Length: 368
Image (cartoon, rainbow, N blue to C red):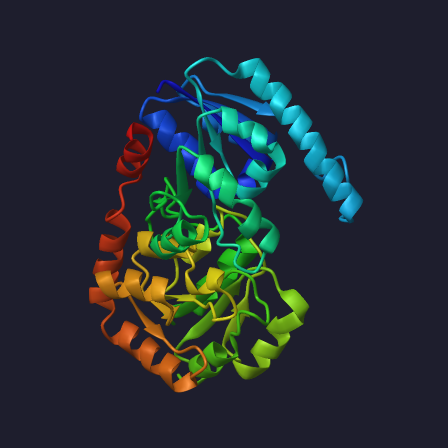
């Protein structure tokens, strides 16, 4: 296989694993033609640097329809279908394979896909989204290979969609990771706030700050350390929850939202990284967060929810501890364990990061 046409509905920057796909396949000698709604000039340069890749932007997303009503969504899907197939027709050559970058992309392109050899990349489990769960089965069965980010999700999808083989698992590991702790932060105001923390260990939560990611118990546990720890939150503040958490934990610092990958400059200062998910849906129970790899690349031990996917990951490598996030005592004990045995957890976190060779995983997929 010499060439792959990768198609993605939406801006490619919104799905870092697709960016990784393009770069890894390019590095192992595959020419990639990218067809995407939107792509910044900086991203274009990154994807096309030192290779023969090309990027075709359709510009069919929210720039053309601001509202989120049903009519506008249908219009965007129909427009994407039309423009994407027109571009595929222009660039496709005999022997090419298609790489379908998301569930939305597959459903928008429709069953015309079945006349092509294609790979299907599915990023979520969609157990609470019947439209996707029921609609994707026929696309998965007709795909040359299905790619997912978690082993448990792969097994579940094989059963749901009656697949002849288990989907390939490619974790959401970034291809580039600075791995340098205490990096310079370009935002001088944030750098000043981090510097003022001094030598106090940082317990970092990065992600959505929302009710379904209950951080109250984490705040209560950190407050028990008599000011020796700092709880730092990085992400979007939904429903004003930061104020409530600040009342629980006076040693809380909220830094707002930072876009990827610049947020890693803040991550690099953490002593402990928090991964909080719950039992509200299978997509959470069998999660595959980028944070696993972002923390591990810096050697940051993880305080993770006691869920199957996270337990399998962290207990296998000894790179973190899984606790009951409904229990303040359990979180406090988990923090004590990580801080008292920090050197071992740092070493094992680096081993976790190095355990995954993205190039081998992609070679195995395209060579089958």
